Amino acid sequence: MRIFLAIIALCTWISAANLLTYNVYERTDRVDVMLSFDAPHEGSITQKSDANTIVLTINDLSYDKMIEKSINSLILQDLTIVPEKNNTLQILLKSDKKISVIASKTVDGFGLRIRSSLMQNATQAQSSEATSSTASLPTDASTSMDLIDSRYIIVITILFILILLMLWVKRRVNLQNNPKSVHSNRSSWLFNQKTASTHEVTLLHKKPIDTQNSVVLFEYGSIKYLVMTGSSNLLLEKFQNGEVKDDTDFEKVFEENRRRLDEYLKLQDNTKQSSYKEKASADYAPYDEAR
Image 1 (cartoon, one colour):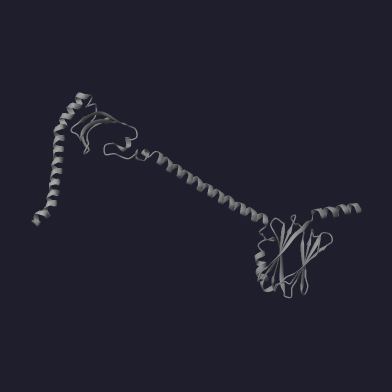
Image 2 (cartoon, rainbow, N blue to C red):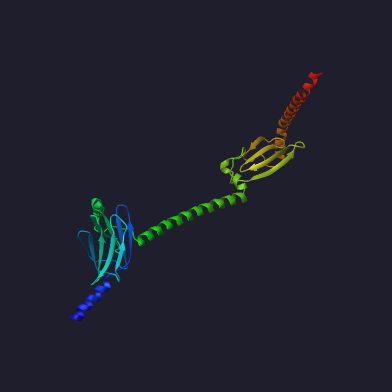
């Protein structure tokens, strides 16, 4: 029988939690005593009070020494932690005022908060605790998880920004290395923009008119263009369906447009001469008036 009782006591001692640390947080309207355990605490908590002392008895909790601490607060003056037999711990709270004490476990059971407040604040404190039998207090594990989550989001955001930056830099480098690609899709006054990327320009014939101008026949797609190039670019004709096949056809087309080209060049020369005369007369007009 004694062996059986010893085994039960040993199992109870093994399953009991141990008090690791305690901290006291003083506020203007309350004093919190935070206890941390090495295992989830599953024991019961009872409370009794007399004129100046409130005693909390915590079962299945052990500690190896007695703690006495003075607190410089209007709410609480002394804190005493007294280990008892059978894995029981007593916490004595002394105050010269009427106070209310509320004990709340953390969600994971690794901590206990003992909150002391003046009696006029007791109703407010109890209403805040009435939503659940055990309050959800922040623990070191939950705080670290929140920190890890925030860091994970920050890292993902930075990586996304770096990827966008690399894509932008790559695009800029490609544009600098291939500047012709920027203008490859621009429309021309001779070509259709829809077919500009599927055909090439082929030079068929070229014949000079004077030292500055020439007549060029080139093919783009299924259309041939007769163009005067040089001091000014002038589209003369467009041909389809094989109207100009060889050199003979080109000479014929050239002669047909020769008279129009001569008139155009003569008109251009006259325009240049008249503009020169107007400029010269304007330059010498002040000299004639002075005489």
